[in-house]
Image (cartoon, rainbow, N blue to C red; front, side, top):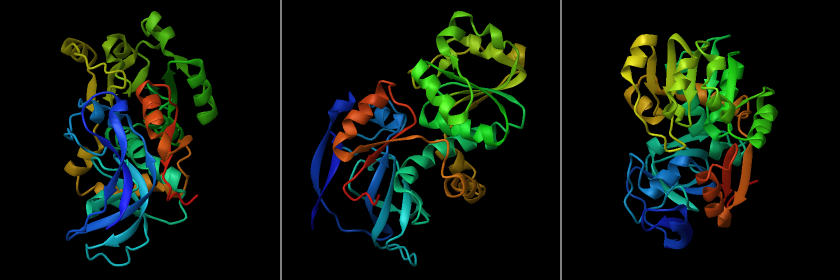
Length: 328
C-alpha cells in the first residue's frame, strides 16, 4: 500500500470546496485496471458536479474529473499487452487524481507518441462536436452554421470540424480577446454577442441552416429567427445556466428540428456505431493532432485556480492539468 494525491469534494457548492488530500492505494478487483494519471482535462461538467446541479450526481465525498490521460500500471481484466499502454480516460468522476482505478469501458488505448496534454483534453470536446455536427446535424459543405460559445473547448473543436468539412461558419463570442482567439484558431472573424443581442439577430434572419448552441442562448428566442425554414437547432450545453423554455408554436411555424446532445448517451444508444464513431473521432487526434484545441497547461497544485477560471467563463480553449507523472 502507498499514498497518492487527489482532489476531494466534501460538500456541494463553489469550486473552492474541493481540497487536495492524500489517499491510500486500493487493491484491484477482477476486471479493473490501475492507471497512473499524466494529465487531466478540465470540463464545465466538473463545475456542475461540484455544485450538485449536474444530471449525473456524485454524492460527497467524491473525486471530480471526467477526462484524463495516463499509463496503465496494473491490470486484472485479462486483456493482453495492456501494461504500460497510454490511454484516454473518460469516466463519470475520479480523474482529479494522480492515480485512478477504472474498468475496460472507461479507457481508449492510444499510441504512446501522442502528446499527453492533447490526449487529456481531446476526447470529450471532439466526441461531442463530432456527434453534433456529423452524426446528428449531418452538416454539409457550404451550409451556414452559427456557433455560440465558440472559444471554449467544445466550441473550438466544433469550429475545427466545421472548417474541415468546409461549412460556412459564423462563430459567436462575448469579448474582443475571445474574438482574437478564434481568428488565430480558424482564420475567421467572429461576431460579438452583445451586437447580436441588441439587434435581435436581425442580420441573420432566415439565413442559417444550423445553430449549434453551446452557451444556452435560447433565453433569447431571436436566435431561432436566424434559422431557415426547416433549420436545425442543436443544443449542447448551458454554460450560462440559461435553462429556459421555448415556445412550440415557434418550432411549428418555422418547421424547426430541435436536437439535444449528450454524446456519451448517444454512444450507449448507438452501440453498433460506437466503434466506428470512436475511430473517426480519434482520427482528429492521430492524424490532425486536434488542431482545434489550444491548450492552457497548469500544474496539479493550480487545479482549483484553473477550475475557477472555467467556472467564471474566463478561459479559452482547453485547460490541462499536469500531474507529477507528466511525461512531457
